Amino acid sequence: MNASMHTETAGRKLAHRSPWLLIAILLHVGVIAVASILYFEHGSAPDDSSPTTITLTAARPLVEMPPIEIIDHNLVPKMQEDEDIVPNELTFDPEAATDSEASETGDPLAAELASMPGDNGGGTAIGRGPGVYCSAPSGITGKPGGPFRARFNPAAKKSTGIGEAGSKAVRRGLEWLRAHQDEDGHWDADQFMKHDKDGEPCTGPGNGTHDVGVTGLALLAFLGEGNTLRQGHFRQVVRKGVRWLTEQQNESGLVGTMSSQSFLYSHALATLALCEAYGLSDYRPLREPAQRAANYITLARNPYGVWRYELRSVDGDSSISAWMVQALLSAKSFGLQVDDSSLKNATVFFDGVTDPATGAAGYTKAGEGSSRPVGKADRFPAAKTEALTSAVLLCRCLLHHDQPNDKVMQLATDRILKQPPVWNEADGSIDMYYWYYASYAMFQVSGKPWDTWSRKMKKAVVDTQQLQGNACGSWNPVDAWGDEGGRVYSTAMMVLCLEAYYRYDRVLGAR
Image 1 (cartoon, rainbow, N blue to C red):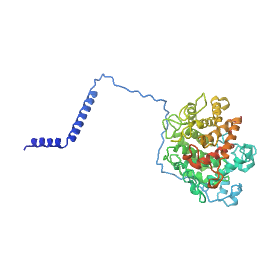
Image 2: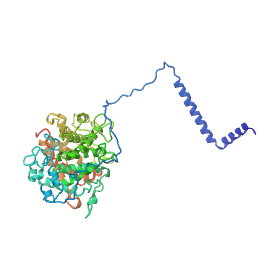
Image 3: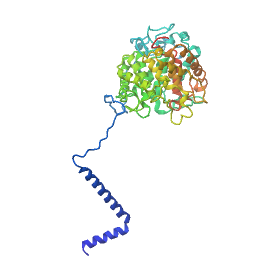
Image 4: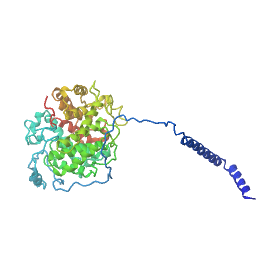
């Protein structure tokens, strides 16, 4: 049998025994043949043929942005070691504490802290000189033009309108936060109840990826009551918390990691806390970490100058952008370098998401309601909140927009007053995020709007603080974002709401 006959016989056997294999081979040969024909037809088109063109038009012009360096986020460089910032084991009674307490208890930090410039409090929290944080009101002792320090004269808090009940609620809230701070300085969003050694542990865990964010919020609550790295009943808490945040900062300036979708929210809160701690304490070693954190915010902008969940996202939202604006304003007011175009672009964006006919601000565009976590929209309807309207209104005030002469700001104020804070767990109207922004916005608007809002806010907040067991001093996380931030978030936010009476100065003056 010759070779050709052998090949033919083998082919017949293959076709008979493996018909599907043969079919597959034939199909592949056919596809290749057709592709070759199409290729050569297009490739041999006459030289004078008109090629088909597709024109892509950008929706909005791109703005040239400097490159951002993304590095290994496991790198966590330490803050320069300094005896002034190292926390120590110091236990004291907040109600009995005085300014001389540190020296009386042998606090090794006392002498060095006292020798630093600006021991009476540093500067205002948003600005040295005219700013957003309080110049000392009548009856408050302290450095002229400096931050509010009500602990020097507790009776003076009554002149702000918060009253004795509000002051006690703030102190209880801070005590709860202090008791649930980890030894390394951070607040554990989902495991804070590990500190409840006796009795029934607290409920209300949050999402464990938000530790940087809730730590920033908690620190803002302590700073808002007048505690700094230098002084205050809770200065040890502030020292430990600030140190932990600096330890989470990597070389790019980001505080934390990109492990959470909302990591930029956490970074914004951490930046705001670092800037306030730096400025209020006048603590020079903290300047560089605060500046790098602010730089990261600038580099994280999208091509249109605002912010979203991701670095340089193609769109933006008013919620995270409002936090970024607050952080940048704080940085700028304490003498840190800030690109003013960030604030100008944010103003343009806020205008774009605001309905000029109603004053309502949307999430990513005008006419859009507030965002809600997945699965929470039915329980917490967007129609029950004016969170974003309040956030944008506050930013307009802090950016020195003139509310009495701005129709949109007046419309926004009216909308907010129609949705006052009421603690009703049945109708989905509890929104601590909204209450925070509205409280600070109405304080800036001042006058009757602030009087009306503050009375209802104080009742809703003070009357619902937990007063029993391990939860004493905290607030139940029962709003739309409670499952994310947990009890640490809800407690910090409610304390900050009450501090709206005295935490900020009025940018445009009393009206």
